[in-house]
Image (cartoon, helix red, strand yellow):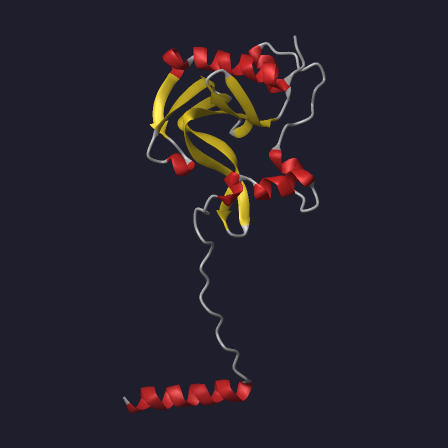
Length: 183
């Protein structure tokens, strides 16, 4: 067996897609792909795959202060997600014959697909370089995906209440008591 994460991912994706006819069903797509139907493939009780059409996954802004995994519309691409015990272990963009890994967390689960990882336990995860000093992180912040408008502008908090001194608080209570007593 080869030790390449790309080749291992291709083998796993091909196996999961071969089960689509027998074990697959339509399900609403998640994230920003909400208007589409995705394919959900239940491989067994501990492992499931989801294929989202016409989108690709990448890092992008959710709102001004939060960056995270985000779906971007792309008519030529599909997203393949494999969850083991409800945790994503393989997330990739599929475009024709090309495969771009987004997340790949090697582990004992690979053996379920007949793959020997040959001791490769290093994850492929875009968050490993999430450091302001990292060249990859600086490159991401300049990328087209990062420049896409945020999904929302962030939590809208009410303006803070003014702080009253003890004397002001006592006066306020007296005046409000007088108003309720006179009514």
